[in-house]
Length: 256
Image 1: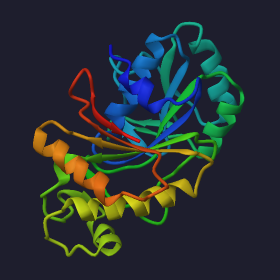
Image 2: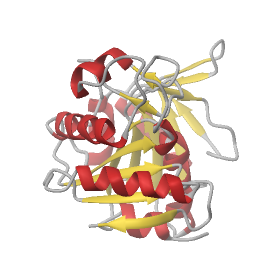
Image 3: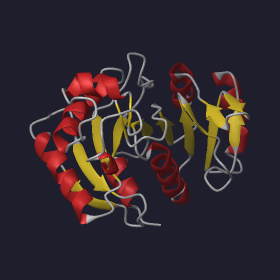
């Protein structure tokens, strides 16, 4: 397994990585967790919203608990057997979803020092490649050390509607792009700037990473470079990655 994700997303020996946005958040979370666990790091994956309940290939164990105390006790036992596992508040078997932990619970567990890394999916996107957030989103733990905003580059050229963009109306309001018009790199960059600032104000993270996923063709990579160009001068973003989680090497370009 390539260590490219560890090298690019983990700037220290431990921390809380919170993933927001759309277009590959869950895939990124579990791939990074796998890489970290293979190096002997103790990793918890979780969400503050909802994700599909992870199967054994993604997470060998998933703890269901309603309190920080319960999670801490269960984690101490699980860490005797696994380097990585997941946790949530409830498993809704009708929807197949794992309902997440509160940010306060995640902060409390982090303070115990049980884990080297906690990776949190903190945004719901209804499997769309692009989204804008409502007033109550994203749900970011205050102790977050690294904030990763994911965008699916396959959103470029798609019409601005709810079939392709989650909360398309808010995206239109934030960017000035009219409903039904093709989503372009400039509107994506404007939206990113809004969303990164909003999420950064919710936590202590000093590392703000833009992860432009689904760079599966040269055209996609070119779109990623255009987005980077439109974000030139944005000091809120620490670095930009143009990537494809389909590939073993993953990172196509890394731009400080």
